[in-house]
Image (spheres, rainbow, N blue to C red):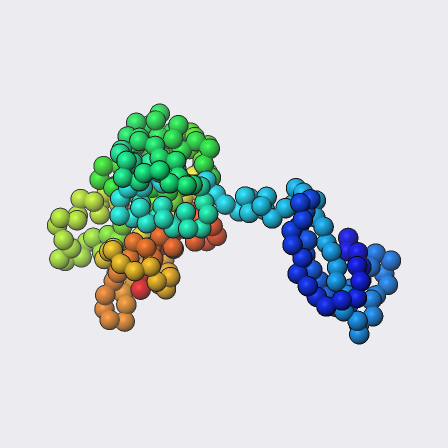
Length: 265
């Protein structure tokens, strides 16, 4: 409950050892129902119990995130974006030595096809993000261990091949789709199909645009649903850094539960 200190100019107050102090000015109501005169300015001290300190509130917002494939081009940018936002990250890969010792990061060398090892590595996390290659890591290799570990959310770095063109045919089925990408793209489409049959896990599949490339972190992009995004210049593309922003936005503010969506310029 607010307590009147003295008429004064509004000044900010520092956080005290036993709580958080805020300031407020203007007319206010007291518990008795009386009102302070409007022509005077008052300073109030509002003290919260220690359990509601700002640090505790922030801890509730931050997540423990496990990133599978954290050393790859997409995974490494997801790692950077998660750390930038203050999350705690467990980096999972076959060899995490290139990550080194970093604040906020626990690195674990895991063969993701070893279900018991993967289950142990992701246990205790709020979210698992997979940036693994579909051709080598099918949905069955991830979904089971994640569910058995008790993790409720799985976000997947998807592919563009399963996105739709304006005529509602898939990108992967279009004439001229590069043969060298077809195996991975087909496996990605199968992975998405498997997720769509999943009833228990809260999953999200984020497809990049046709070109998924190194580049600047701009923070400016468009979000779509199932159709390939193409820029006004006729190019379909997104950088790993901006993709990471979109995926971490979804981690923090879920808008596509049990859905696929896409991102591009």
